[in-house]
Length: 232
Image (cartoon, rainbow, N blue to C red; front, side, top):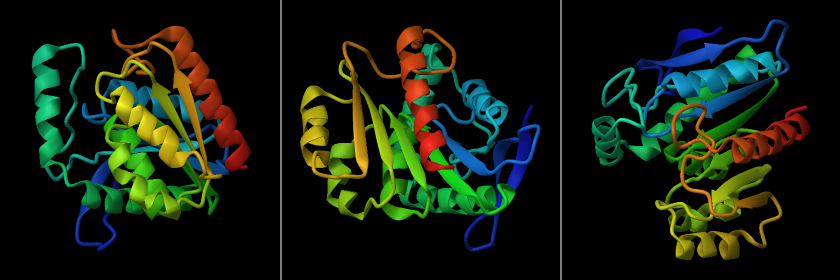
């Protein structure tokens, strides 16, 4: 359904690729799907295609383009998982947020000036939280974001609806971190948290061994309803 297109950086000095999927009719809103540490792989592209079928124009920016363009890795292949983990310290997260700002600008234009929602997974879940604090997106959803406890000092800047999906047995997000997230965000009227008891990181992956079907469907229904309400 989709294809890669070029997005100009905020400074206009370079371009990077983003997978873009368009609906059959004219979109009234856009959704940006933010990758895991595995790049804009088939699973992320499928999520964009699903949003396009739901009537949104969807973008998945290649946030790793400065490291290596078009990285695609599989979480179920140990060697590729190791490579993905090795990309994390190489990724400039602040620059990644600026690239997301550029993608928001492009997506908003593609949606005819409509609203833009952001949804991210793993690294993308963390990046979504940063974007909620730092960008002009209209609604934000993070799945199993890592290290959000270290970003709580920015949460006062969240002014738009934000939702986080938290699996309670996430081996990357330990119980003390989850506790800090719940306590730190409890008084923020813009943030909603959903726990998924006994589930691990990656439970809503579009494909592969990590996916837990019933929980993934529940979380995705909550996300779809959230965007339907806040991007209308």
